[in-house]
Length: 250
Ligand SMILES: [Zn+2]
Ligand SMILES: [Zn+2]
Image (tube, rainbow, N blue to C red; front, side, top):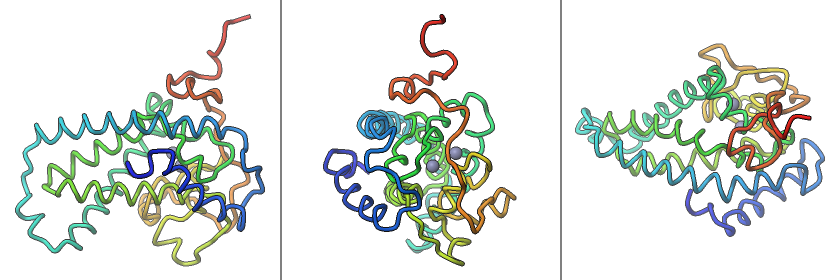
């Protein structure tokens, strides 16, 4: 993901997603809609912070963990290793995502991501650095324990990261029966819906079906966001301030 974490990367993402969102918009919103500056600040500040924290976590994990099944895992054909790694990443990601919604301290971190009232590709960048650092570290720990190569984790992370941007896009495409197999914008827009809570998976919606949390419908959710959102300022997001404790009391 380092390739896109620079001004050129942001421009490339804009060049890809802005035309899509202008041609097939789900909601007609101005190009520079409310909150865009906060999202761009997340791109330039949260993402490098997350990258730094993740590099430290990966360094610690690699130095202390002794893989116990590396010889078995790495002898398999590469396609099988990829399939297994994606499934493991997905189930761990699902569990972590549910924990971020269920545990109050974790929710305070994750509420930053759910504070977007307008979902689009830019809104996908609105993530507290600790959010993905914790999830990716847990995923990396399990994969390393089992002996999957680091390069496979890195490749899968790039794939999942780019797919996550697409999931937030303000586009009205539906994918028919494919929506049961692979996560699409409609699936993830339902995760951000104000009046529904489910769809925690990042890649395979059937994982949600398996655990009874798939809330996708043939319609689109009417509103995104959360009543528990932090104030609409980057510093408030980073420091996890709450709306009700902002500013001096009268
Ligand atoms: Zn969530
Ligand atoms: Zn999201």
